[in-house]
Amino acid sequence: MNLFRWITLCLALLTTSAMPAMARDLQGRLGIGYNSQFAASRDGGVPGVSVKYALSPDLAFEGVFALATSSPSQSVSAVKAMKNVFMETNLNFYFMGGLGFCARAGNSGLEMMGGAGAEFLIPGVDSLGFSMETGVSFDNLSGSYALRTMGVSFLNAGMHFYF
Image 1 (cartoon, rainbow, N blue to C red):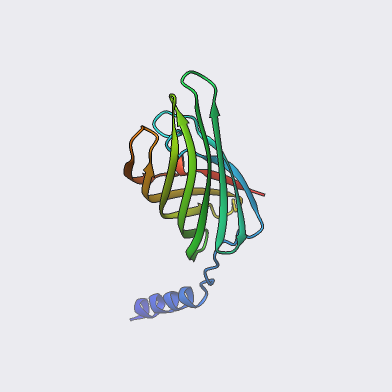
Image 2: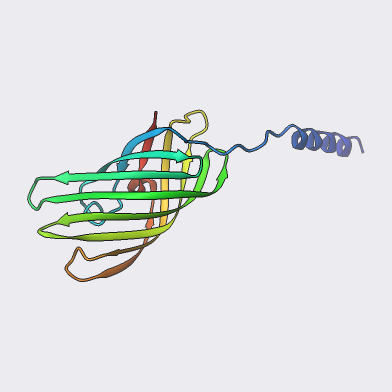
């Protein structure tokens, strides 16, 4: 019976001493990193330099620019908006939408995307964020319109260092 009381006491102490979860607030912080999820960037393309800024605790904007002057040339100029819908400690879940002008191998066109994502910040390294996103993409880069589902890991959705 003593073991049962000891386990109950330990569990009671653990549950009452837990710290409340605080969402990671990135308001007013500028993040610089990369994003490779637009059409001219993925599938062996050139990754884009990304600048991300949070206007409020739940609204952020990102600009993406990529350029390769090699043959065939590639470029991306794009913007994205993210709206946080659920926040946990070191993890923000958001809805996102993006619009970009992409050029690759002599073809150019617009790309629109929408979906949901998450940004994870490593505990203790609060300035480094890793993004993962899923949703749909619609572009006319190949000369005809294409609708694609997307699942983008942090290797393509991006990493940002926040100042």
